[in-house]
Amino acid sequence: MVGQILDQCYELGRACSENFRSIKDRFIRHDQVLGGWNYVVDANGVDAQVV
Image (cartoon, rainbow, N blue to C red; front, side, top):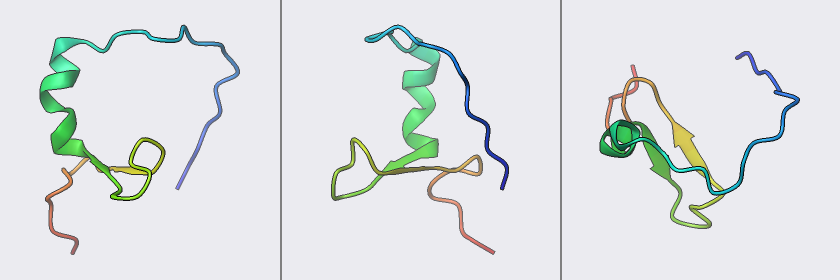
């Protein structure tokens, strides 16, 4: 796994594009506990089977 921290400030409350809103649930799975903070992003889709 590779990570990168961006040293930049981002505007609060910035709206997501309609395109992102239409596909986000296919790739982001929110945890049942504290789902606003705990989530998994999977490029294969959250319903993809792990091999």
